[in-house]
Amino acid sequence: MSDADLPAEFALIARHFGPLAGPGALGLGDDAALLAPPPGRELVLTVDAMIGGVHFLPDDPPDLVGRKLLRVNLSDLAAKGAVPIGYLLTVAAARDTPDAWFAGFAAGLAQDQAEFGTTLLGGDTTSTPGPIALSLTAIGHVAPGTMVHRAGAQPGDGIWVTGTVGDGALGLAVAQGRLADPSGFLLQRYRLPQPRVGFAIARIASAGMDVSDGLVQDLGHICRAGSLTAEIDAALVPLSEPARHAGADWLPIILSGGDDYELLLAAPPTREAQLRDAARDAGIAVTRIGSFRAGPPRVAVRGPDGQPMVLARRGWSHF
Image (cartoon, rainbow, N blue to C red):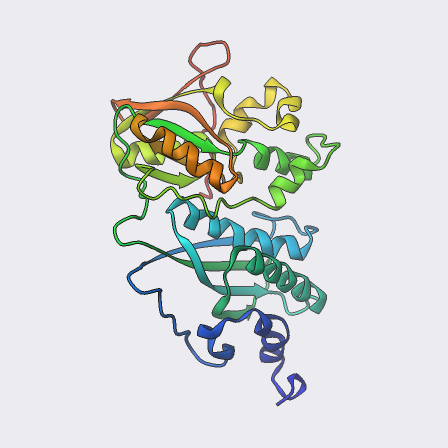
């Protein structure tokens, strides 16, 4: 049967999402996928949604929207030390959404499927009177008992981050016309995060998560999970050259803004060398920005002047 013989919704699925499907998807022609995890491995599942006008702007290129949707979920798997295996996708779009938008969106997914070694397993498409709503469930696998949790940090553990912090939030400011970005670096970082897939943190990091809602806020989640106080030095937080060029007035946004999708990790001093070696093997920069100590669950920030820094806003919240 050709696409022309199918109802419009199923023709769209066959045309744009059929080529993305892996073996477990059963040709996207059944009501469920069939997934066999690698022998002796445990599954790790995560889900994130993106809404037009909230997580991406109406004029963002659809291929970058697709890539960002997949990457923010792969970032969660990376924070757990998991290897990607497949994903489920839900797309809700207005009936008059151009076919070219779906073509671009699917092309972006295809590009990153090839880069990160994952395939589409199934999903759902539906119409909506509101903005485009996207949801993706990523599935990965780990060796038994090795998934990195939010809980697990201990007093004396170092606080580490990958890459550079604040680029995503500054990139959003660029997209909104609030900040200049001559090189285009910050806008690209906002539109296209880099998930740290392949960073072998299992059995090295005592706790971890990715920075999606702001460095300080997400670090607070690890503090609450482990009943610890975190102390970080703003002067040690790694910044890209464009972020440094933005100036000191943007430091609160850098520390509390979201959309970085870098990894935030706790690691004991005895595993510091292992962490650095694993980062080098993965081609990823890591920086120690502070440490955990016994105390009430909170994040204490020391400013560049060495004095306590008070942030009016500690991170992003949808509610």
